[in-house]
Length: 355
Image (tube, helix red, strand yellow):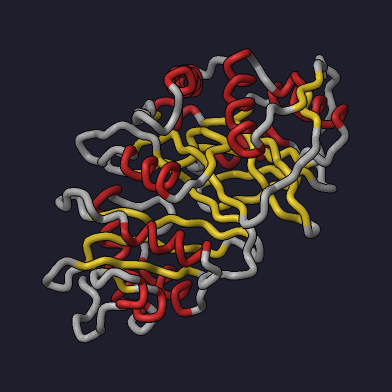
């Protein structure tokens, strides 16, 4: 399943073992098959894409820019990609190397990040995002420690939220992921956060840690009970393996939408509440979401209407997901020990459905 060896290595990326988007696009079918082979060797059926055809189409139309490294025989051994989400957001992902390879195969991820930062790739975009694995190693799947070091330390993505977003592997397991991002411009955000978005002191401390890392200051938290119930105005859609609620003009039956999605195999639901809402509405929406079983996970910066805003993220895990959830394993130097302890406690509460 190797990319044809007649293609030259792309020396313009500073590494004679890496081919960048230009050369990978010359043979999108072989490139897609190589990437899927590497991902499948790590995760079994990859939850984002188990077929090479959609990946090849995205390479052809420029939505996905792949980076693939090779051994001395010309066989693909590691991969990464930049994925255009919209005009403002680019995801760095599809990062993996063959399980038999020992270290030294972070170059595709690092070169992809450098390509975005230099403006070579998707120059009009504002935010680089990543979904960073935290899981401990299992017999079937490697752990996420190396990815954490690459994304959060070497590339410098800033963690802002954490939750059991995705599942993969054989046997299939639900895993805790960190949402991390990097903005081309410093996101200046002035907003107050109602205290009732937090179920306990641990959630508040994690939120403060994420906020301080992003903005260099503590969040403005306003004491509010926020127990008044308000029917949330959400639109709902599916993004791959996720059910997503977003503040909008529609008013959907949240419980019915979740019940239907979970019965059809969806395991995780996300609700996004933007801080441009009035603080009273945010407090009431948070209280309502908690009534629907959602849990606060952190926040994400978004770029809309020519400026940065913040969306608070809430999540709800299905019963199937709880039964298959893998606890995270955090590496040293990425988080302070206090935060590691809180993150571990948080993952256990997801599994037990505790507040």
